[in-house]
Length: 96
Image (cartoon, rainbow, N blue to C red; front, top):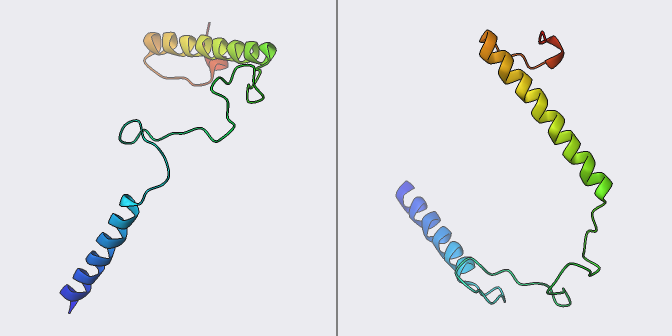
């Protein structure tokens, strides 16, 4: 009885799985798995269009400063670890 239930469940799973995999979704694929298409009206070139994010240089500079500060803290942590053999996350506790 269990074998029949298992076989029935397996058959249903295969039928539904194959049906959804073989369904045509309306895309024109350049290669298998590469089926991205822009929506109608989306420009070929984003720069200068209404979809251009127009990043603020001040915000980008803030991010760069934040990354540089993080790298400096990590450098101090690594130097301290090489000296002491113990990892200290809190940079303020590292003796200069």
